[in-house]
Image 1 (cartoon, rainbow, N blue to C red):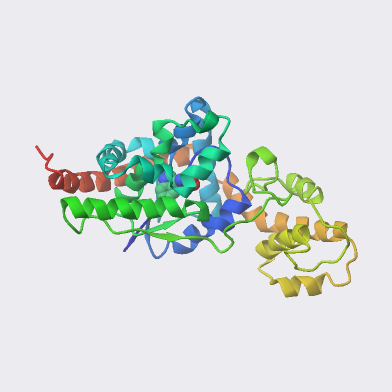
Image 2 (spheres, protein in one colour):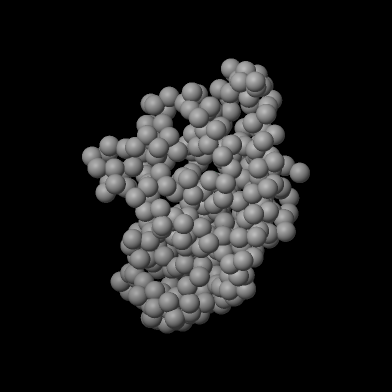
Length: 328
Ligand code: TRP
């Protein structure tokens, strides 16, 4: 079986944007691929070095979110990044293959630095954060993954991994790592309920673990356009078109079908009520499954995953060290 690796930074709960942008692919692909799911705590610390407790607390949250959407712990190897020191070792070795300008012009890194202006004042960035794509290349290659389902924003980071793999092979001989392929979700950029980029700080996201009351409150407060027609017209009716995408996600219906369904509705409020209903229904099984796992089960599962990941990492490091002539 080919290998798949993906990961989440434990910095908060996962939301609907994550689900349609990448998580759903993991669920689809888990039967076809030998899958590794990493809780990227070390990467989370690259921009949360001052908040280690926050990272720690969210480890459980992201694992539960993944269990909740149906990532089967019998099939998938769940593990925590910091438990596999070989990944850090591989990061150091890969760092010789990455130049500063390559990192500085990486679109994902650039974007994140500008978004995190409060911690990287005047664009002054830490060595650790600037280098996170190197560490992510090690995450992906330690288990020799061939596919990496991620959000669209992460594409340049996976492309960077491919570059590292090519350079490694150029200097140390071919055939050690596959060049990983990016897999992006069906709806790569779901906007928040206010039409802006979905983010925790804007309070415009629906979390996979939100209660029916929370969902209803958020949906009823969502941005709409002027007028009252339910038509899909993202140019002129941006807000309602965005909400129709939510409806599509929850029901699997197409835009035309949704337009027809609401052709005699003449208030956005009625549409929002219907939307809140279908979202509650869509997320109910996810929330129920989340509640069915207890903490002991999670830590036990992570322990098992760590063992498997460690075996793969040791095997990879043996080859890497031979190739780099440090196999004393
Ligand atoms: N950078 C990813 C994110 O911010 C998380 C991540 C860490 C990851 N390591 C990975 C994703 C390896 C895919 C593969 O969402």
